[in-house]
Image (tube, rainbow, N blue to C red; front, side, top):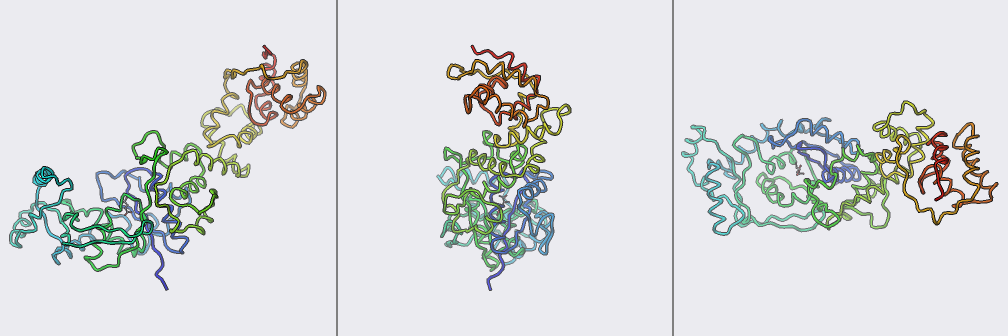
Length: 480
Ligand code: GLU
């Protein structure tokens, strides 16, 4: 039997959960669930200067909100912990020492200044990619001993094998190869004794028994370095897969610094996007079922996900599509869940003390079909809370029955209950009495009552505006 799949997501706690990272985590999770494997989460916090307090927990909570649950790892525990790299420094040290002992790695005492100097010299010769010139590789054991005794700061460098080609079969892109000639002896442990990412990641993937590494395209060039370490220890290399980059509509890479785009999951939550909709949208960023269908639940995705259908070309971040998907999920919510979800967005902007429960529920339900995301309720609610100037309407094409204004005013003034149902009957009655129907009936009533030409259910809008306001609007209305 094949080994159980163990696939990991390895975030760095340097900021909030970004859509690109959320997509990686989602695909890792979906594959793990599809193949009945284990989804492991490891926190890669060795870049101490960039760490942000609690960013890891925030990211994991955002994942949980999306429905991406961790089986094993940071904050949940498991048999191969600790799952925070800073708690594993002793472990890395042990493996660094093994490589030094086996002469597969060596101490490098070169100072920053010297390295910078060498870099300049190389670039003057036209070598843009800096390769360490192995000065310290030539040191004798006695020289090394002496420097160590003097506590000279050092990096540990990996001795990159000569004339080797590193090949791997990428789950998404097929065969990829790199030549060792292009890679200089790179640092595996820095002067502060903290290992570098490319080293620590391998030790962890091996000890955590990871079988699959699926991550973003930006890590392709790191893969040969990681394979070198696997080979140096004679360890089995996991299966690698690299998801394509996410681009904007103009096909330019979506950069984290692009301020025109909201890029963090929490920002979408705050705007009233539903987790199921975001999850659905993320799944389509780099995977397609092979047909036109676009709406998928998490369970359907788990069933259908297929690494052979991962996209090989960049995925376009189309905000209109996300909005469309979100509005579809909102429309499909049952009314109770929807009200619970949507009400806070109304409370956030308006004082609801003077509005009763029926009014609030009616407002929310009336605009359920109109919103792309819940924060848009703010705009729709404005006319009910503030005196907003009515829109300019070209009345020349609209047929106003000469008795309509009078009838409407009379019936509305007489309407006792002023409930949406009563108002519905009232409009019907007017239609029958004046013998007008459809657009000819509704459009003029809507314009007179609300000052707008379009909107959701007319009887609801009239109810929501309230009797006094509607009477005032009708009175103030002029055909001219
Ligand atoms: N910590 C890396 C990052 O956040 C992940 C690297 C990996 O998946 O190997 O980009």
